[in-house]
Image (cartoon, rainbow, N blue to C red; front, side, top):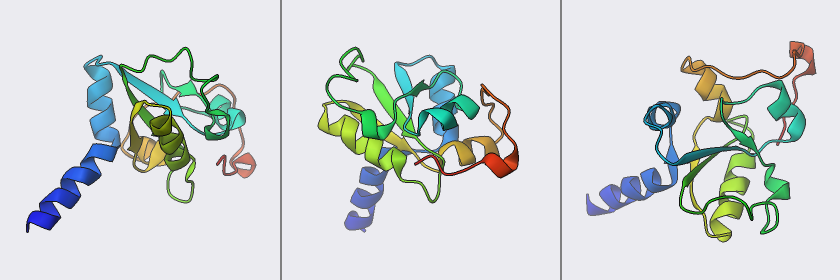
Length: 130
């Protein structure tokens, strides 16, 4: 039983679901949402207030102006995309406090939360932005 408790406590230390993120954003805590997908996907649609920082571009230079005192929540498309995992790992290596949004923007929308859209895209144009 103790092993299970430790496992689930550890798991919750590294991820959150859309409801948790929404509640934290409503509380205006020091939460910074990072969209780890490519630029075109962010421009097409993203979580309101998110910063686009593709995981492949994360380094000490690209993150130099980010405040390390906040909690960074990283997301991508969701299942089938691991850009959020790669981004969370990159940020953790750079000394940031970070969690991964399970389900990404897909589950964010599935739970009924709003997104910001920068450009209209036909469904046929949608592609993985990992």
